[in-house]
Each structure stands twice: as C-alpha cells, then as structure tokens.
Image (cartoon, rainbow, N blue to C red):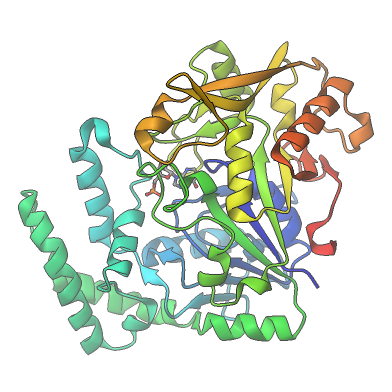
Length: 430
Ligand code: IMP
C-alpha cells in the first residue's frame, strides 16, 4: 500500500488544491506536516466552495481522518475560526475526524505583531511575508521558548512558558520602541479556548503508526513549495519551515520509509508571491497575460503573483532535492493562446554558463536565463482528458520538459475542474 506526499516544486501556488483534493478522495488519512495558515487553497466539491488554510483537505470529505502534525504552527484562533467556517457549510468536524499534535507550536498574537513590525521596518529588505506570524513562531520553536498545544493543559505551566517567551519578545519590542506585550490577558484568553483546542490533541506519531498498521492510505499534504524551503529555497526570501518531502516524516512523527511516492506539483510556467529572486520573471505583456489567464492572485493575501516562463533548471533542482518521483503538471491551458513558449534550460552568470541555481542570493539575482523556444499550440487544451488528444505542439512541450527535468509527468491538469485531468500514473497505485 502506498503513502503519498504531495509537495510544490516551485514557489508555492502550483495548484496543489485540485490535486490534493483528487488524491484525498482516495486516501483514508490526510496529514499536514509544516507551515500554518500562510497556506491557502480553495476546493469546490459538489458546487460548494471551501477555503482551507490550516486544516488538511481531507476535512471536507466524509470518512476521512485529518491530521495536523507537530511540524505545523497553529494560530489557535485562526484554527477555531476555520472550523466554524466549514461547519457553517455543513461539514462535520469532531475528535473522530480531526487530530492535532500535542507538540505542535502555537502562533500567538505577539508573533503576528512581530512579523508586521519587522516587515514594516525592513524597507527594501522586506521578505513580503503573509504577515501571519509564521516566521516568529518557528523562531521561538527552535529557540526552545515556544508555547505548544500541550502547554494549554496546566495554568501554572502556561504562566511560566508565557513568562519565558515574553521576556524575549518584550526585550526586542522595547528595542524597537514598541509597547510591552502583557501576559495576563493573553493567558486568560488562551485558557478560555484551551478545552476547544485540547479536545483534538493526541500523540500524532502513535496515531500514524496505528494507521500504517491498519494499512490505511496516508496522504501527506505539503504547503508552499520547495523554493520557499528554509534550507533549500531562495534564502532569505523563503518561509520558515522545511517544505521538502522529507519534512513529512519529521513534521508528523514517522520514518522516511512511510512515504512511498513523492508527487511534485508543477505549474507549466512559474509564479512567485512576495520578494526575492525570480530568474524567468516576465515584466511585460506576456507576464500580464499569464497572470490574467491563470488568475494569479494569492488565496491568503490577495496579492498579485509575479509570473514568468517555466524554469526547467529550478524544477530539475527541486526534484533532486526532494526525491520527487513524478510531477503533476498544472495550468497547461493557461499557455493555450501563446505564439511562442519558452523554457529556461541554463543560466548565464559573469559570462559563464551554469546548470543550477547558485546558493547565494546575490548570484541568484544576477543569473540570466538561457531559453529553449517552442512553438505555441494556439488551440484550446482546456478540458482535455487524454494525452493523445493534446495538440502536437503541446505534446512536444511536455515531452521535452519531461526529458529536461529527468522525471515523468504523472498527470496533467487542463482546467480548475476536478475531472479535467489527464491521468498517467495514480501515485497511490504505483
Ligand atoms: P511567510 O511564510 O508568511 O513567512 O512568508 C515568507 C514567504 O513565503 C513570502 O514570500 C510569502 O509570499 C511566501 N509564502 C508563504 N506561504 C505561501 C503560500 O502558501 N504560497 C505561496 N507563497 C507563500
């Protein structure tokens, strides 16, 4: 029996929602393992639209267990709001279908404030974060002063933990000329909602072990994309978690051998929200066209996404870093009207040609893409469900792309509709 990890192979927003939704209909258990409510996707099931940020996609389906692992950072109020929002649409959420890890770290109001204070103070050096407090919460986790779900059990313990974390935050706030964050109101607010949070909390590592023993199919649902990974992405313009597939193991408490297939969701062009290097970015009318046709606006922050050509060098690199077995190519139909389509196959830097993205951000900003050009197909591919029905030029583009990234395309998405998918390999059945 296969367990599948789904991750983004670019800078996020690759169209994971549709693929994860399709795979979650097959899975028994869906696990989020990193990130927080900086992620966001929209699912449309039987005509009802669900906007998910923190909850795993399995939550909107009957008879699925949704799990939030220890690697996720949870804003407890955002978590409860999201539950209420989807309950109002008739979805049942209870302890039998939602589990959160006792060890997951909380995002608290002072994290969100710190995210905003720092972004506002950074001027041109800002990261362009989602301002949800993600970075500051992960910093407190590795700084060993974080408040975790289990800390909500005892008032005495919570008091001590808050004392520790606020000592740190208030020192920085003072330095930045900001007001002191008071402990008591936050403690009272947390204690008020504690029972609602704690009722979902369990030792997730043990639950996953049981699910595996019961031969349940597990889907590990990644958020963001590998180029936003804190180790492997375009640092410092990254998120603060590991977004690679191996994070599914550490972020939920199972071994790497629990993941049998890694599916990399890959857009047929490239987008990025926020600041940072983007070698194939198009600041011209083609970029505008991709943005309009692809409806490239952020789900969480509504920001306009930057658009550019498919970067084969980057995707080949993220495939190697994350052990991607196959890619799901999304939004092919967005390219339908173009006369010419380009794919980046190498970079030039200081007169030299290189075949990978250098690690230093200064170099990442300097590289110039070298393109291979393809004739556009100028025909509607929207809604096509068989590879053979694709126009010849589209087939050529996909075959060349496959060859270049040295990885098979396992499915192709030809519209936002769930059924408009060319399925080549079912990751659960390989
Ligand atoms: P943070 O995760 O809010 O700290 O933001 C850090 C960077 O990651 C920024 O460039 C964000 O735009 C980007 N980012 C965070 N979450 C997502 C996502 O779900 N999709 C795309 N970009 C994201």
